Amino acid sequence: MNITDDNELPQGIQLTPMDESFRQDPYRIFKRLREHAPVHKDSVFGRFFVTGHDDVKNLLHDKEFFSDPTKANPGTFSREVLGARLAEGENPPMLLMDEPDHRRLRSLVLSSQVMWSVGVLIFERLWRVHWTRSQTMNLT
Image (cartoon, rainbow, N blue to C red; front, side):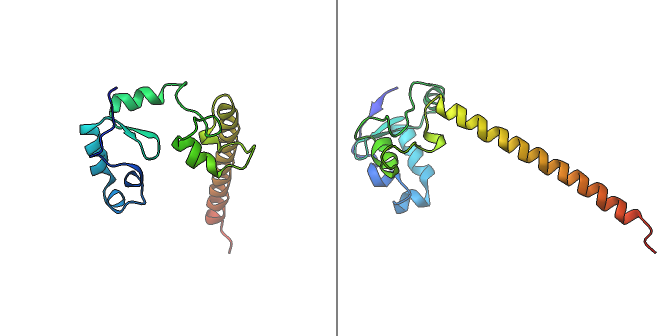
């Protein structure tokens, strides 16, 4: 990965929905980053934009890379922006948690979603059976 810090490329707010041109067409901006700086350092917010497919894929599979805001380095986007919303001692949202806490909570959520889905399927089938029987019965 080649890290580029090019002043000609967008920085800070220009890489957020608060910027009008980013809101109108973020794909154009990401294409420019991908062509000129596949790994772009945003020096304003202390974050990196990784736009190359293989680089993104490798990062997403790197268990050592991600860190929750309470453990992130001072001055980084994660710590300063995401972590600023947390009260002292508060845990981050599940999506931002590190392992093993993320996996533990994810398993609880998934098991409850599965149970809810099964309940809905059972209810729908029972309703169809009830509705079908009531439609075919001669009530006269």
